Image 1 (tube, one colour):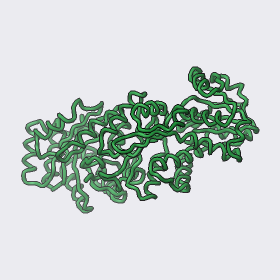
Image 2 (image 1 turned 60 degrees about the vertical axis):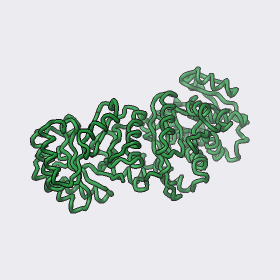
Image 3 (image 1 turned 120 degrees about the horizontal axis):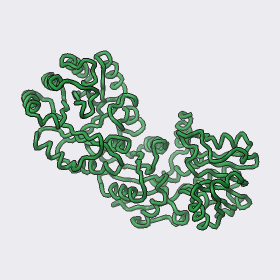
Image 4 (image 1 turned 180 degrees about the vertical axis):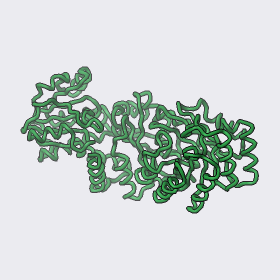
Length: 518
């Protein structure tokens, strides 16, 4: 069973008691005392802190971290050793000692002597704050050879999400209790998946500002956003593949719908940087680790065309519409890792546009449309517009991409600079310009928008982009990206789960999520 250990880094006992109370209220399952954060670290103060935790009934981990391995400040070697020794004698459930220090004969003899008459478990920890360890399996075995009774703790920084797979593999194959995950933004999901894969602990902070390590999530985030209390070995894993993903509402949306439908499922943001090589490696490894229990993925910028290519090579079924569009935003993972690929951007965009036109898409054949961008969303929208008979012009910073897309669908292409002379009935932004946090940006210069236009921004965060604000001021009818996002998400959920979610739940999550960022 994986416990959620809240790291408390107190200045003194008063500060500790305040943080301990908050940790309890938020649902901590264990407490780690970072004694190296104390203003005046000493063993007597630590004994008092241990007793404070004892009153809560929660397991307590005592650490006095070496500054070379992430400690808050330098604490004299003999003082650190005495704190750990006294913590053992006081009955702390766990003490965490750095592997590098435990190799020192004095440390080893003192700690082993104290453990001899105690029920305290020893955690031997190894940290790499620069990148992955060369071989985590060898490291794991070396810790156990040094002290067979110890609990290995192996934590490294992931500079790319794909560097987490060695840790996942270690957790899957470990035959003894183990703590393992990755630090940094790229390793964040490993802290959550650690519970599914059986890590003894995952560590959390009271809030984001008190994170003790890079990528550490708060108790609230884990409990509320990522369904921590529901995760077990049978949990089905879904997620968003893209770069960036931190802004996305998809995790909140899907996890709320899973909760509403009483499903043992979890949706995570997978930050996959790079091109088709990194994308393909990620999917290969995820599908290979059967213990992850994959259900499917949403795919966003910049991987939608890579998803199509991957599905063509490895998929069981690729929706002909996705092939026509030339991009995939939905991957359903079936039995034995078999992949089915779809595109729900198309229907989401056309339904959102129709909601403003008011009479379906048949009126589109009378209209001219300007599409800004040539990525995955643009491909879906261009496909829908041309099928409906619109006269479409594509504008893109890289003209060659606009030209290729236009040639595929029988459209016109223009350079990005030509936007200054743009004239169209419908204007659709399919770029990330104006997306949070760069909310003051707009792809359209002043003087272009007018009251006869329909302006559609596929960016949904923020709810009202700078482009839409200017369009309203000009008297144009507007379509926000949330409408497309909501409609494509409903279609995607049905592919994943087999039934549509409650639209009211989807709308509530999306609108609340976007308005809270304003």
